[in-house]
Length: 192
Image (cartoon, rainbow, N blue to C red; front, side, top):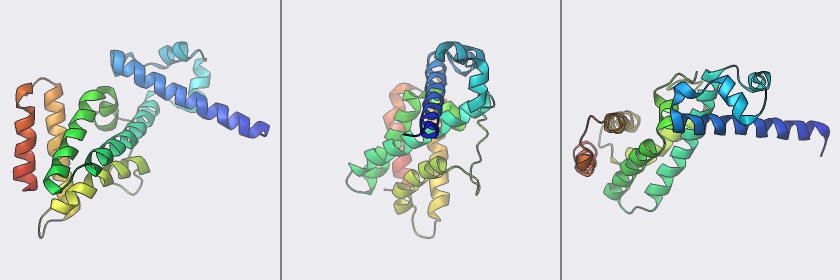
């Protein structure tokens, strides 16, 4: 292994450590607790080393969002691949999405609530974000209905899921009605 390859591998390892530490700190104490000073202390590197990887917190949030998008896409595909039939797949997708949002609140915030400097619905949208949308579209596109654009239907269904995830987390919806909400969403919006 050349010196250059070793340095690149070490750099990539430091970057993964920074992102993992930011994510862990955000999940434990919220994004307000994630500062470059605290990250530098936790990973035992100086702040200039941190800044050599990320220009600031915004880029770190973006890196966490991209990592989360890849994880969410994998979770959605895993849930839907085990399901048989359109209704079961859409229900599994809805549950997997809501479970991901509930189980990874700081990551979900990085993906959809905080400014990570990432472009959405644009030609410059990073691939992990496009793939997360594609994971939704793969299942929802098949139930969009005649004359309904599959991408548009996916956006509307996704917006409903996001609303449920956000309102549930904020304590605005009764937790005991979670399952009937999913069933209603699948039955009335997806009509399967």
